[in-house]
Length: 133
Image (cartoon, rainbow, N blue to C red; front, side, top):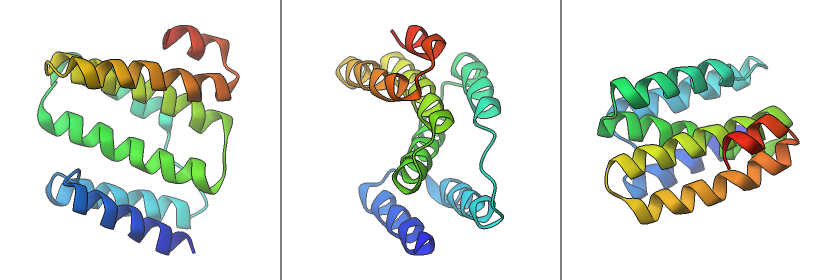
């Protein structure tokens, strides 16, 4: 069932044009392998890396990588809601909103800022709620 969900996510991403070449597909497959091995991504490391890259490499590839991570988190939260995944989704959503703002997509940025508060609240982590406010 999880394989079908991963394939559906990949298909949806490809049809929307959110996959940026083979790198995003490879990352989605990598996450599927982690899931099959009974583990998940180290989202704290991903958040730390994304925070650095937002400043050092705010390229379109960075935005595509962020969106790929957010799609993977969405799938994880659909399958098994988890406080840490909600916290990661909130922080990565905020970073993605910052990236959109830097790309002069202010309307989308505001939507992501506002939306990041929802998973932050679901995480129950006060620091995350403050971080995305």
